[in-house]
Length: 141
Image (cartoon, rainbow, N blue to C red; front, side, top):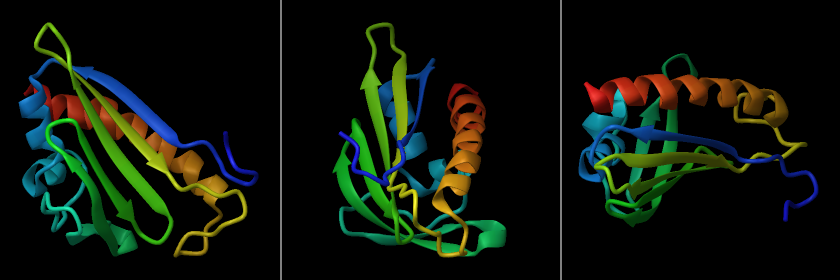
């Protein structure tokens, strides 16, 4: 059940025509993440603090919180958000990938002073294209 004032998580799922190992390399390595999302200093180690290089928004501090290869990667992003990458191998050699972006609060502002509800809407649209276009093109190339 959602706490009062919490906004729904952003959740994007896609079926990729690639093995779970190939998708894991794309979503749980620094080079892979840079290829479909953004430059970073990520390392797949629980507790590792890294930076997402968010272009015009500067560097965002992150910290790896969960690592269960090749099924799950979780990390805190900035002061409020949590991202999870969930992978599930399918029988036909394909992989179901789900991105979950949580930590949205109706009355909170981002580090840049923008209201969470506004940024959540923008991010929801952004993730739609990042996951369903960029990630698909990178993994299936």
